[in-house]
Image (spheres, rainbow, N blue to C red):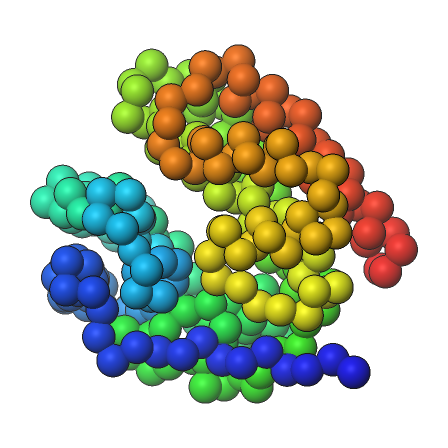
Length: 256
């Protein structure tokens, strides 16, 4: 019998070193965007497990209508300024989401699950209250990784093109994290567990695919920020990344 996953438990306050960054993000965004509906924080900052200088800040920004070109430029400027002034985070990643899409039944396994179980609302009308608790299923794992092929392609291009070490390490961390989470999504429907850290995600994956332990170890090296030759990183994306894509297709053909 499947069991409903618990909703994300919202802490009463953030770690002090990160609370100031969250406050700055909220202040900047709510005063610069009239169409802002609500803001959500996910990842290690939301779990109160962030590490200064090693963790990023993951923000979901729900808006009433699409951002204009000028508004997107303002958003990019705000992100850049906050990143420069906040050495405690490696990056500020903002995902912009229209309210209509967040509440669309067609995207419930992606955005409904994301807002209900992976985020905490820090400003505005909390849309997670519109959803009941989800049960572990393949539809969620598939929906959360519908962008996998494009993400791998984009990461490959960025890594090949950049000559800036800092940006290179950032691209490596990003693609490594994406691949680990994608691996977890392959077994989410089987494990029946919601985990919110890449360490736990990797553990769940390896219960079912122990033969890929070495690949997971290599991804954690990339996720740690350790510099690895481009050739090795590109091999991981092309080889193990393609295996993940193929495994998604294989499972989807079985389950539908």
